[in-house]
Amino acid sequence: MANRWRSFLILLSIVGPGIITANVDNDAGGITTYSIAGAHFGYSLLWSLIPITIALIVVQEMSSRMGVVTGKGLAELIRENYGVKITFWLMLALSIADIGNTAAEFAGWAASNELFGLNKYISVPLGALIVWLLVVKGSYKVVEKIFLVVCVVYLVYIPAAFMAKPQWSQVALEMIRPSFRFDTTYIVTLIGVVGTTIAPWMQFYLQSSVVEKGINKETYWASRIDVVFGCFMTDIIALFIIVACGATLFKAGVHIDSAKDAAVALEPIAGKYASILFGVGLANASLFSASILPLATAYYICEGMGFEAGINKSFRDAPIFMSLYTVFIVIGALVVLIPGIPLIAIMWISQVVNGVLLPFVLFFMLLLINKKDLMGDYVNKRTFNWIAWVTTIIMVILTILFVVSMFF
Image (spheres, rainbow, N blue to C red):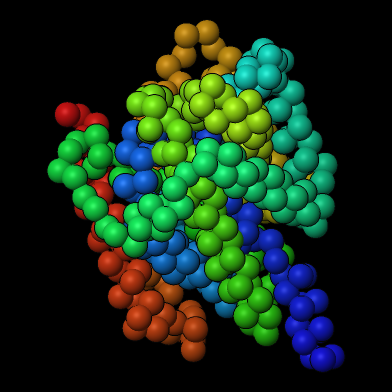
């Protein structure tokens, strides 16, 4: 009994990086993608969540394991093993994508607040100030606790789905019955569902968080549970978003372009409270992701270029890290405030760049995690390598299809 209690306390002390990283993936763009998938195709894309969850667990576990074993972030490992030049260009491309992603999060925050009658010229500066103060003035332990509480708010999508009164037998059937349509819109939506679940920045942020938290090999078992639980949680939330929109908007033939549209359209069909829950979920996800994305960017740029990084450090200790975090928040917020700015285009371009970069990031991860001199006995097992390489190849194919679809 004493050993079980001790193990439980260790697990509680380790929990954080895996759950936070996975849940941030359900950002404004992710919720929009899942809402569109449900509204336009009903439950027919639910089957994809099973292979997506398996792939996400494998990729996230590799990131966590490398952080525990090496004590270094992914960007730092790439620089040390493959040179500054490759690292610089990779960091530059990722930074460009993350500027667009951060702007998209503030756009989601603005849209969700407009549902409740708050103008974006008030909500966006206020949101930017909140996320800036949180990281710049807080410690890692405080910030992590706040992020974990925020993750719980994602659960509002579960009652929203139940209020939509879906046919659960049909939902279960579509989960285990793969279907495919040779239809451009269906293919693009499927690619979007896959692409929004595994993003390049996630691998850098997770590994950096594991390192900063100081997780060691002895407690790695707890970190693994944290990662797996986080992956299941994020895709379960995705399932309920698709179900909510599939049971209501798809049935009514309502087409949407964003998560805000979904929240508005739900009210006359599923009721006021379902609409409010959807809006609250969007606001939570947008501000949460607007905190994490600039943080992830600051982490991997500083690690890749050899600068001090970490939430526990002050402006004096890590001036480049804190300055980068500040600059990314300011740019992301200002972009949203520009009158007439094409926010949908910015979101799509950033997603394209993410999709193009992901196979490169996975490729470097697989090379690094199979280095015996780097990982020792913690190199990938054969099964993990098969799943990871298949995931990489599928992502390359999907990326090509996604980029081609953007031109046609």
